Image (cartoon, rainbow, N blue to C red; front, side):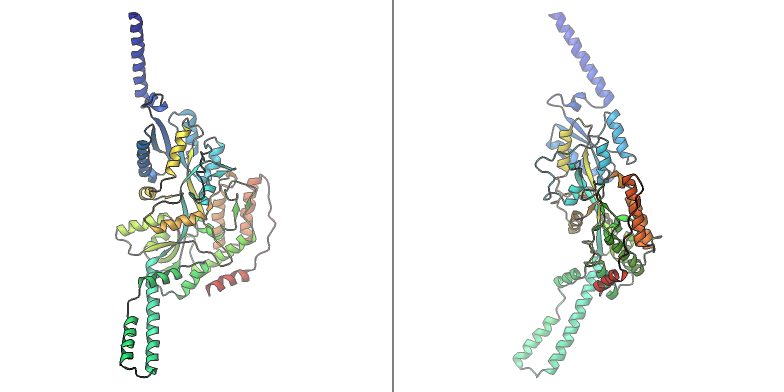
Length: 500
């Protein structure tokens, strides 16, 4: 018995030493990784490429691990260069591969076909339209499956200088008040001399007229001045008494498709609602041609030089008070707050819904949704799904406070109502399509928009873009049947009627 005991003790010591060696070499206990014992913890690695997310992910990883003591969340910042390729390589050859990774929705098809994206756990109807905007759900849909969790988004909308509109409202109300006082004085002069009691009433009336203009009246006038259509901006420009520093009533980056797509977003179909069906592609049609004609016409009105404009310069001019209206993404709010903190901006700004083109032609913005994806190679899909759901149910608003990102789900507690406006715009946006065959459409559209802005024919330019994309999708030559040009007079008459 003693001999057996000694042999068993030696074996136990050897196992202990071997375990220590493995721990030293790997930096992690094999028992911790595979949770073989009750005290062990399962490690779930989350890869991401945007350093702005670091404080948020680290904070949530700690909070989650405190709640779920058996799980350790490990956020890992990696390079965005050949990101999917790096995930695939690590999953096949490296023990430190991600269980979850964050990626934009337009790359989901590629990830799924490479075996890197598992269908999510949608038990309990987790992805429903009461909790998530339709754009968010569409962004992670692929061939009838949900292959990611919508985490945060980017889209664009109309942003305006609220200070300018408030000052304009006060001027209008002051003018109306002065006119009313003049009219009242003229009426009183024509009336008979009042009795003693009537004099008191008249004095009270004059005192009321002299009251300060209420904030409610100013807010109501500002609300009425916010444009519902691009045509309304033209009307505004015609009557606005602009301060000296204003160089443009309306200016945006006409070279970037993200800020231009709203012109055709309601009429251009690339892959259906989910952007995953190559049988549903409609780029070249009468409505898209008409919308691009309106777009081209605006160059003659606002005269934006496509060779010198870019998004950063537009945002800076806007913050400096040189522009009244612009089209911007959610990042502009953080840049405004930063400028205010430095004492470089004295204006207030606000976000409005994206205006329609005219009463006949509607608009829809483009959006990109960053998703949390469960790696198809993960050995811990249950734990990975659970943490992804935890992130996508976070209503604290920390994601914006810590990273400047807006959550892709409803009921988040933001302190700024402008963020809620962006969420509303996102809900009706067009998600970036995820089909590999149309991945270069945005570059081609960007070139086409610039050419049309600078005077190229709208009809033939859109026709060429459509033929190139259809050739890629079908794998052979493709020729669109030429659509008769919409009547310029009718289109521009609608623009003029709206602005009258």
